Image (cartoon, rainbow, N blue to C red; front, side):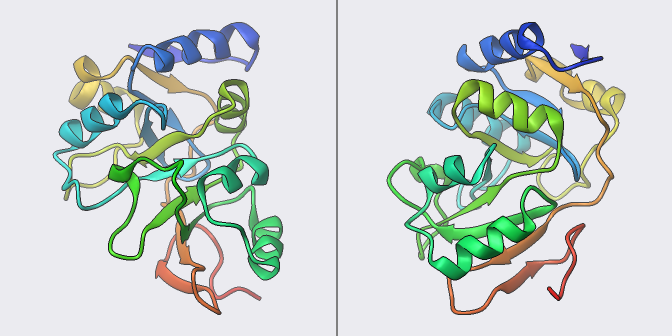
Length: 201
């Protein structure tokens, strides 16, 4: 079911939030590409995403947050330098690898270093729904493992429609994946080049 959001308001957010609270999985636009997601607190919905994507459960998915304060709820305390870096680059087209804390479900924790990928996209729907829920949502590309990400709502519906509670359309993505930076060490380490500028100036 494709849901076209002409505007972001309490009613549209409530409708989407209800789908997620009932254990639903949705496809939604970000600033980079379409994401597939569910509530981080719903382990059954997380398992459903792994099955939909035929994704190796040893490859954890990232979390999408609305603010630095929310992001901090899912990682170990940020160092001053990391906090400054995140303030500088977020919201934006980056995923940051940080040390996970106990609020992150085990299936989303990277092993063996116990890390988590965290995002704050520059996208109205993403920021609004996570703020409305006061909880992070899972974010992973809309594709079966090993295939190219889908960014067209009609193509997403054709491939995954029966398995998703909704496909949200609002402010289309730019079509390039986020840049992934590992900031668990002394200096940021590029994991994947993408829409975010690298090297950092």
